[in-house]
Image 1 (cartoon, rainbow, N blue to C red):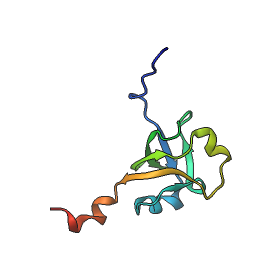
Image 2 (cartoon, one colour):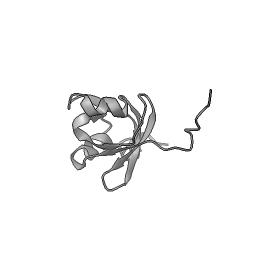
Image 3 (cartoon, rainbow, N blue to C red):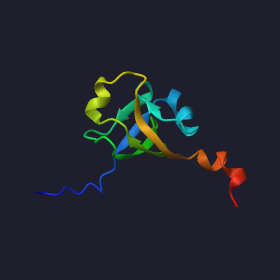
Image 4 (cartoon, one colour):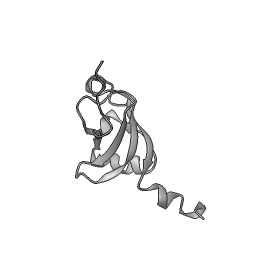
Length: 96
């Protein structure tokens, strides 16, 4: 059995402009807000979330594989939110 080295491969998700703010407020990415996804992304794979302009927005976990994303309902969650660049601003008061 050959083990594939996926640690050097980065799985990416690009969100549409209308969904960027929602993600930055800590919400999951819905299919309707999905712009692109790296080919062959497996379900539960860690992903880096980008804007369509290739600006990194945060991290997430793929709720669906690339193949599942193609045929899922527009309101289905495709990326579970893990962290985003807006968290510092939201939790600034509680930082020591």
